[in-house]
Image (tube, rainbow, N blue to C red; front, side, top):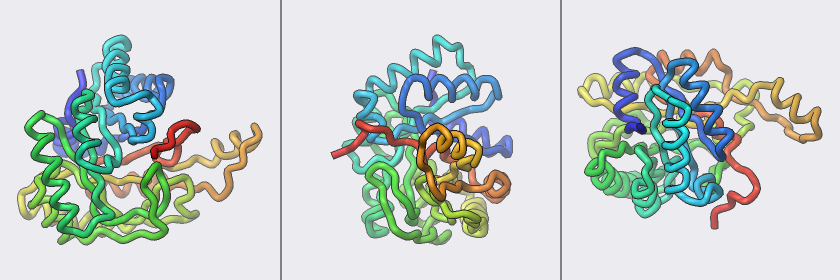
Length: 271
């Protein structure tokens, strides 16, 4: 059985741990993530970008596959199926109709008030159906699917609190130094004070909203070497150091989005 992301994230808050979101593209990838989560007794969010969903022939197909695998593999840890970077209301609506238990509406490229407006619309629709919603405030540099930005705009903690109050969103992706894609820059440093300030403001207001760290892949160098030794050509691919991610969890990050740099394969183009 799939659950909403909010349900597992509230438990994570009470238990003082963070949850991993792993973006999936096919059956083998999904199976590996589910079995690992079960082995580690860890709740997990399965993220699916619009491009990956199209590649796997649609939201209903993805949801049916995940539900069947959860049952067949006897997965007992909480699992949420999440639309990653939904570009508009219709995309979120389609994912919900297809069986997703969580959706992201990404209005980060819009003016602040327009981002609030579209997020509020998705939240109202999703909450009426028991589905959790993630939004994004601030801009991450890098490229992924239809999401691209040459530079970062850090999230203002005070703006984040206002945004959450007005939208009632369940989770908020913040920009604090991570990047989409494999090349986050060697020696990238996270602005942990942004996460700390945002979380402290929310606690002061008595508001629960999970903070999400996109662009959190570590990109281990031994894997890069193995790929290149087999004929690949990956250059200057550096992720976020594991030690920094652990510290970010202690500073208020509730969800780390992994495999964000690997969620494209030929055929997944979105028009």
